[in-house]
Image 1 (cartoon, rainbow, N blue to C red):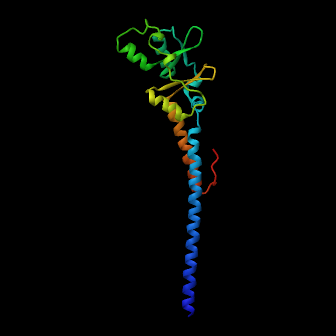
Image 2 (cartoon, rainbow, N blue to C red):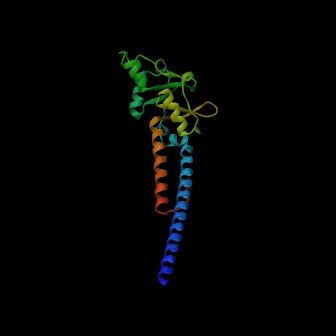
Image 3 (cartoon, rainbow, N blue to C red):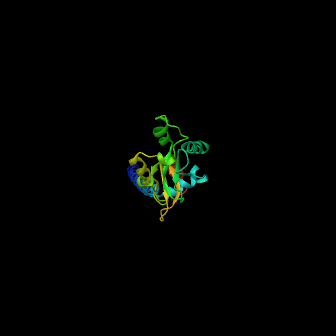
Length: 199
């Protein structure tokens, strides 16, 4: 009789413990999923300005006169180890961009002399440019580059003035930084270092 009662109590206790474990597991899973959703929703919040602030372009004069020679352009690209420059007209206004790809396809492969050709003769003109605003998201900038098969985006403000330029490399770095940030937060949560994510 006593043995039967003890057995019954043990079974009831086991069921109760199992239920508590399931409830605790569900609560943790729900909180984890909610936190993960919060992190995911923040991925697109990084902007072109974030990428620009970390870009090698932000520490240099990334412009060149459209009347400069191609050899001057090549020398500047090599000196700063970059692949594109913003061109400006005689009034200092944005007139286009010129890249190493322009040099290769429009000068070198045709056997032309880079000393005799002006930058404006090989540059992409402003009317055909794809540009971005500093507040555009990294994802939006990536979409622009991929859809047009380009590797650089001039940044312009609301007045149409050029305020920077970013490369595909800058955007990739920004995406990787965001990914590392998210993984670090998830790792901290997994080991119990805080239950809420603050981005």
